Length: 595
Ligand SMILES: [Zn+2]
Image (cartoon, rainbow, N blue to C red; front, side, top):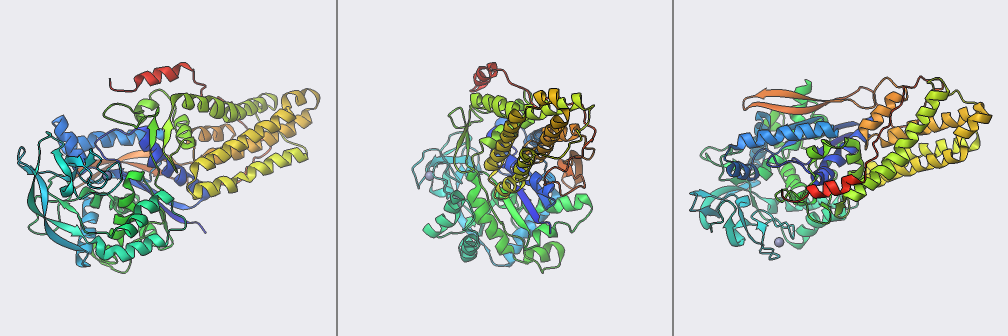
């Protein structure tokens, strides 16, 4: 019975380009996980989009003297280009600036309001006399009142990870002009998290046995240490989704409140685009569906506490408002496998100091699979990791090229040359041949289990270990000597090696989709492993937005050991990976830092 899985991927803020830390933090793990489940024949939907609203975008627009819309569109276009080039195979990568997302978000808001989980309160908020307007939390920085970090943002402290009440910041200053703001009164809607607390705690305790410790610490651990309290979910801002209540003109839904709703609205938009308008029910109205949220550690409270609170609080009321049915509640997160951060050459990645390896820039000089390989071997699954250019080069040359790429290329070239471009027809396999075939076949269990548990580093490490075992087998069997004395024996060895390589190709495929697809073709297969990515312009009442989509192959059940056919026609092989010159290490290090 195929499983139904939602891969919900962090929504990048459309105010900055994407660097390798972002990719390994959430986008790449989601893609590996999704590709694996597609190969296995499971029903998986991978969705996300650009986070178009909120102050991160308006801050950038102010700085560049342009509009928020223009800022969002510029970065959204770059995201789509990068994800295509990296092979991040979203079923739908859209944006929060769509009329569908407006409607879904407003429906969640009204559902919460109808169910009694919203209240209004007049609050004091920082007002900038120099600009004549209220400052959103992100426009204010100051000293954290919990840990005394001096560069805390109004909404959250990057040092201690706490969500902050901006009005309590010590020594506040405006991010725009460094002026000192003053507290004035304004009215906002609040999400009553205190009222939802029992449900949220119960939700977390049901998942305690398998969630990552860092995620539990920042969700269940924090709630047990300190009760939840209401959070304002509207803002004095004109760029965003209007509050769907009369008399609330000039105020918007808080970007964090509505961006997480994107996981739901993107699934709905995907359904409409595919022409099956109720298909999203299979993920969102299905208690058996498993929803995985791929995010970085800075987003844990929003995904593990507040978003479940929004879903629980909406109950069946969202369904009633949105579709006029009202029977079904929405699927809660199954897992939130949040990653830690990746640093760069021993320092924290910083876009403003250009201390970053930018995705598109990297891909202008290197191929996508070496990037995916290095980011997976170095994925910050349980602690912060470091991008080191020397380490990148070593792993590319010693592992990707020497252990895996050469194995595949050498054996295919040897078979192509000596058996007329065909898979040799073997005699009866010897014990050593059967042993290596069985060893690699067992990888479908071990690599698969690791990917399902989102231990992607371990999964890739296991696949590479098996490639090393096939090299050892070939060192012993030495078909290049064998062929001179006994071509029948050499045929058995080469057939065995090709069968092992054919299996390894599938084991590596979720991690290295481009080169595995190429190898798949070289091995003589005519139906591809994966489907195709493509872009599409979508029109709605807000204008036009470009989306990234995925067209499946239609073949499923590919996650199993090779059934390579003797005498199958091979194609002329070409190397899968490039060996990199040692010079690139110094060249790349010289690029880092402001310039
Ligand atoms: Zn702090």
